[in-house]
Image: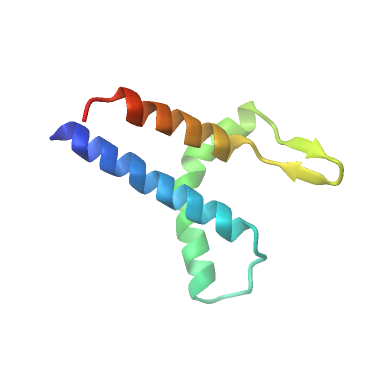
Length: 86
């Protein structure tokens, strides 16, 4: 029972992280529903991404910066989902 809840929470976090990543590709359009969703997703994901971002800085690819923290979190959560009992 408890492991089912843990799996559910980890999957919900993965969904929020994916939505946060997709919304980060688009510039903020000012106050509105989309901006509110963006802020909520940021509040959910930043407590996990922030410490990882401080440990592992972004990679510079020419004029573009690539943040690796979401990829690391995805991999860690996927490993946890495979290792934890169902």
